[in-house]
Image (cartoon, rainbow over all chains, first blue to last red; front, side, top):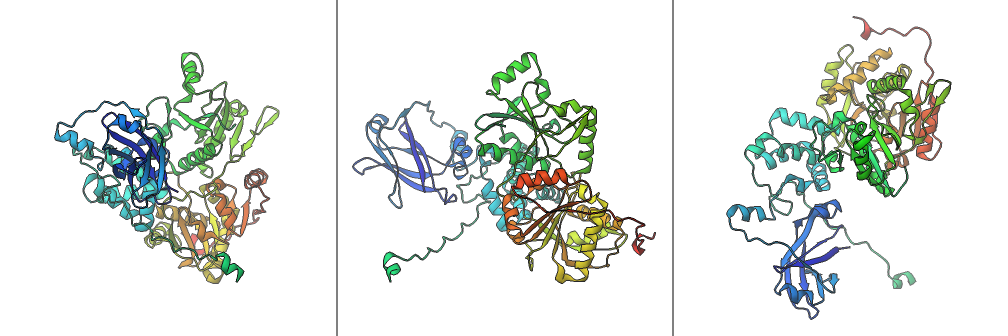
Length: 230
Length: 358
């Protein structure tokens, strides 16, 4: 079952909320916001990070959305809005009156500010703290050594050195260190701090820990009433 | 510990030194991904899961011994959300209590001989601290204080589903009399993950405490010999014990078990066999379906979830010491009677094998 919520619209006309399908945590949902008459006022994907969603264990925390609306906030607040899944048209949430959220809005004036606003890059390694299941799936599929090598490549941009590899593998095999704990240690290292690099977020194809989703299960055969009667 | 309230939890301060804590009260996420001893991590997971099931809010408190009285205590009372209970996770070296609260103890490194020795020393030094405990989680601590026997009430907590960490590694049994270090290296070299078992195994997880139980080791070494000589009686799965040092690798764990076997006086054939295999880490619960599980009294049974106890065909509690306390706790925890098999020490002289000749 898809869970979703239209939270608010900001003064700048950005519709905020979140949506995810706990049964399909690896997929981002394509969404649209419709007026009562079916006019679409915003569209996009639910793939941004929010800490409260991570705490609630909803899609690793990466299922928020901020959609620029075609109408102003007052016009939106005066109407009933429907959040629908773009591919199926299924209504996920109906908001009779979207609250207006007052936030300070700054335009990005420098390249650094634009990069910092890029939602497809991590602002902090802590944004991956809710991805434990994702890392576990990677380890189950590729093995622990592959995870450690991938972690080194992802955070430090280099192959794992033999000493570091051996010590972290030992710690992780003993259960003394979690997969995210390893990423946090590498991101906290002097090497990373001296040469910080942008790390792709889980919504990026460059996110190395993404594993191929399992193929959908074949539908179960059920007998309808007629067959029962037969 | 009552549900729907706030519970203060403290861990030994030695594990906090490397953490960047926001204050004396800190959230779970500060500990969750830190480097922690595996048994402490499991204990914390157990506490967090149990608290979630009882809708109890957990607040971790650093250095609880600071908050005994005065302004510090007033601050804690104001910040603790009306907590009435404090759970102290102890490694046996210290027990930090908060006066005025109901203090509970969770001794997590069960089976680690040095830690159990430390706890016993602590009980001898400050028995009054233990006498005031409201409960002990998954423990059977009993001691004498003056003319009274003190036994803090048991509080059984367990995992519904066994927390499976990294995939378990399987290594073959290798026996080189007098050269257990090299046998450990050879065994660890052949480590494999996800090795299929031909039939439900007999699984015997070990700890250093279990390995120090001589009659139990003698019995286990006999079983090893039987299975090595007749693989049809296998497979025998021996869970490698956690060692009390941070740099221990699989080869060191294998060596510790082989050393214990060599002290048993049982002559083992000089060969390598996958019919007896060592397992480092928690085996996949599916691999234990229908298995025979033999738990020594010094093995922390709460590391296994109820899914494993439901899946295995037979569970036996064993050991050569007094088993009444562990059996009572284990049966209460499991919710059913558990067969107990007490191993009687063998009297007389131990046989001397050629492997023991210098």
